[in-house]
Length: 141
Image 1 (cartoon, rainbow, N blue to C red):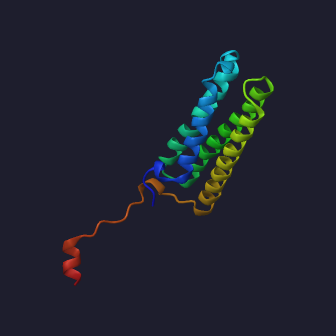
Image 2: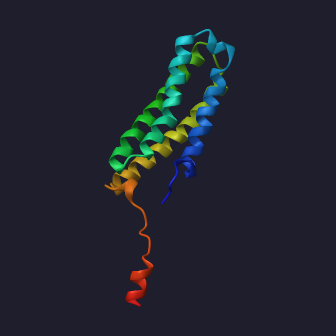
Image 3: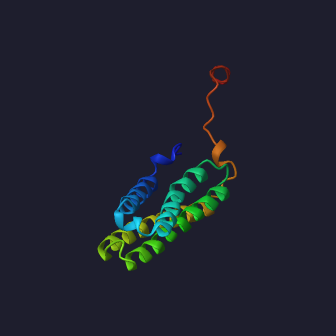
């Protein structure tokens, strides 16, 4: 079982997407529309934050809730990037690249959510392999 979110491929994909969006937001074109910049930035930050917070939850159902929030934030980023492209803050090629990356992330989040719904562990955060008791092993052998 994975003990760190950073070990999962989905985390790398989310970091790549969020970093690409942040690089776009650093451009002067986004400075002219501060409200749009701040909306995209907030939703972008929410993706990894929700994934991290969810990963620490004790049940799969609780993790799902945060993953749904992360997925919603990713969808919001993509929708607002479309607005940014229409307003001339980015090119259609840059939007297409972000949509491809974001679409892949949305698919991975959806797959993880479906997996958790099937498993539905109730003690996710507390499940640890039992340490062997050397005294008990000696008595049973």
